[in-house]
Length: 463
Image (cartoon, rainbow, N blue to C red; front, side, top):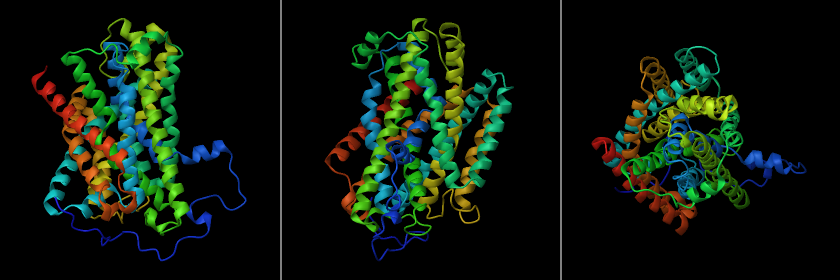
């Protein structure tokens, strides 16, 4: 694989900026004299990182974590603190590539690699989009099941309503509206933290689980570890983090309709943007792992005592009611309804943005459909495809297993692509990976190579 283009010749790229902004307000800061409270400033930091973290806890992830707690009680809680630095490293790297260059991960792959490697990457993205569509179908089914648990009507009807509604909002809403909706949907996941308070948690046992004192050597245990890694280090999130940050950068006044990299900002503004973006990513990943911890601990305290078999998030919600009361059931249902509505557009848009960028096409929710046809066609196929599959498929677990296999194969190659891009001095300049980011990033890549191989082996052999 060779570097073929370290400039920005593609159409739609940000033009060169001849001067650095002197006015702080030009880089998105409050006008001189305006003061924001610490709370408002904290909330203002949150954006792509928070949404990525919340989307990571989609209904398929919730079902995985519930299965972990129901099957092994607190015996796999150590995966929460272990995956946190991995998630932080990978998503910070993806985010920094967008900040440094003003380009999405797909467009950067186009600039970095020659034609043959790009063909391979395109095939992987297409496979990822298939996996995302299957995952979106399973998530829509979960949304429908959640509404059915609330007594709102048939699950299939609500799956269709949710899918069509999401498609309409994505086409007509515009990025500013969509970004606000995404932020509010993140709050739904706090329901799982609340579930802890209605469950009788054995905290000494939780501490033992967090320290890895209940580790087991069995294929079932190792298989669930792979499932946890697959749902926390998901390749679609790499593209989403990058794409969402680019959309946010396009909202800045600097550069017009195009996103511009950190070198085109004043030095203080660049440092502030990088610092704030890292805070956003780290907070988002911590939030994601907190929800993961809450689901495992809550289901361990309830369903884990009875050895309940959990296959979907809806199964977990139903099983919680006779043990922890109706509050737990409804809180659990509210969480996966909200997370499903958030995850479906992220699943559909991530691959669409990645492939559009790789092909050199315009993309983005702030672009009109007439200007970004490829992006919106791919987005529509993914979303509506998910709706159709959800209406005619009654086996969400089968969809998730197939999706997990594809993601398990794709995660490591996409991590390799991301790491090669993020260390490229021609692309990243002074913002290329440092020693810590490189170490954590390549270590995560190696772990996902092993996890993918184990996942494929256990799936194929039924071990």
